[in-house]
Length: 114
Image (cartoon, rainbow, N blue to C red):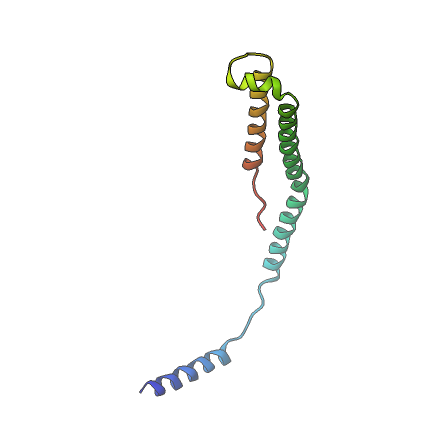
C-alpha cells in the first residue's frame, strides 16, 4: 500500500512541476530593491570613517590613560589608595570617565547590517 502512495505522490509532484510557470518580478520592484540596496551601501560607506574614528578615539584615550598611569606610577599609587590627595586622583577619575564615555558612544553607535 505504501509503494502505491509513493508512486501517486511522485506523479503528483511531477505534474505540479510541469504546471508551474515561473514569472519574473515586476521591473518596478526590481528597481526599488536596487535603490534600497544602493542607499544602504552608500550609508555604510559614509559611516565607515565615523566608526573608525570612534574606535581610534577610544584606543587613543585608553593608551594615554595607561601611559599617564605608567609614567606617574609613583604618584598614582598613593592617590589610588587614598593616603595622599593630589591633582593626579581627580585627573585619573576624569580620564577614566572620558574613556568610559567614549566606549559607551562606540557601543551605542548603530551597527552596520550586512
